[in-house]
Amino acid sequence: ILRETVTDRAVYNLTGCSLEQALYFVGEGSPVYAVQNGRAVILTGYSSSYVEIYDPGSGSTQSRALEPASAEFSASGNQYYAVGTGSGS
Image (spheres, rainbow, N blue to C red):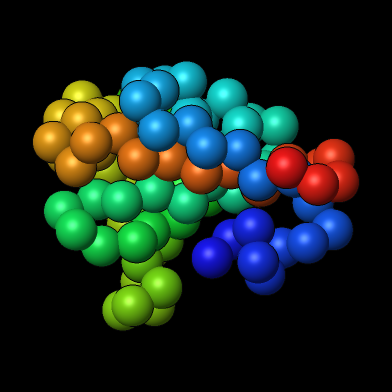
C-alpha cells in the first residue's frame, strides 16, 4: 500500500530488523510504519528508554518503554516499513 500511495519517496521494507534498527530511520526524520499486536502503527519518536507510537486507528499516541515495546514488535514478526527521502523503491 505504501509503494502505491507514496510514489515520490523510497519505501524500505525493514521486516526482520530489530526495533532499535528501525528507530535509526525515525532518527533520520523518516516515519516508520510497523505492526504491533496485529495493528498498523507509526513510530514517531524515541529516547534512550522510550518509543513514541502513534495508532491511527484510535488517533492516540503512547510512550512505551523500549524493552516491552521491542518484545511486542518481535512477537508481531518485526514488521517495519520506512519512508525515505529518495525517489522510487
